[in-house]
Length: 459
Image (cartoon, rainbow, N blue to C red; front, side, top):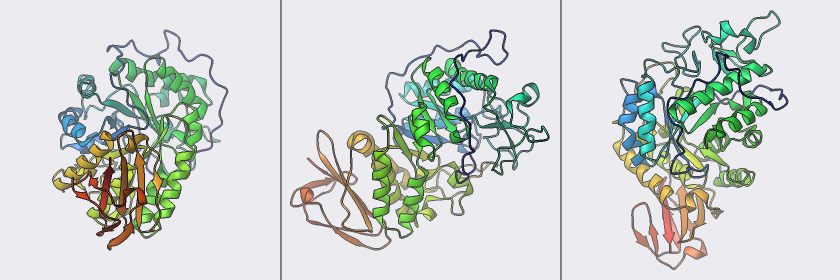
């Protein structure tokens, strides 16, 4: 939510639920679907998912879903295949932070923020994304609600209470704008699952990105994921790393890799590339079959809360930001782009305010992203391959991959000075093509300028 540095609350898992449905007269029961549930023609797997995260309020001056739909072609052309919408629900105004409040303080799980649009606008956006063979994933906040959510008065038993019987904010956090939910309550579990089912049956969405997933018991997620997948196949994303194995076992397809971001940032600050390659190998080897990490070099938390919110400062320069993005998107795993990142935005886009992305910051950065993400999407080695790291230098990350058609070598200089490395023997004395700029070379050594990278192909 506001920072992943806060440890997940200890959760006591209950026995798996035998019955998930509600009584027909239960006001929290799932409304009858108004849109036919359709299984997408193109299956997007965990490994080849490329998320584009949208903060609707700050995506455009209007801050509407319609304006997101108007830019779908641009988002698709960039290379993304999954549209991740940060919470689109009405935002709680009681105890809110800032002028607008946090989108992660949900006022009503069944409604759309009227500032963003209405049900017709959202249905149109989902339909338009599906026409482009893109998935739509909603950000879902199951750990807590806003203080003016109707459950506060209608179902106070759904919430965690202190010794005085008062509803509390999530323990161990400074999230005073939200009220903690108590998953020891079976009715809450049913109500939350029904709310999640509503957006699938009513709008035909394709999955959820579940905020602070580790704060909610794993057995709830198992019940929720099983219930949703009885409706249609779903792509499920947990904002969790410390408890990732529990999340994967509960049915999530992908989890955030916060440690990869931290190690990537440290590498550009001077740490050896060996620490990054070692982290990749150890975490990749721990993945269950058909699961993936989501790698990123920016997201809404980083842009909102980091002292240095932009790629250019986190990775030393715009050239450094490009080098970091090459590593992020070409090491096999799922990956993501946060809105504005593709134009090199240097803005702090606060979760609680209206700060529209300046889409004219750096048009050439969009050209870069389109090329790199195009390479990722065209050659399967960069999504499902098994990289071999060639650690001749602690200043240049070098790895090779193969697919059925060719071999590939990626070399990224993570320093602001020129670096020279020897090419692996398989790439020496033979013609190789740089897929990024379409140049051809034949050499035994490679000299890279500050933050330069190459993506070589040998057929």
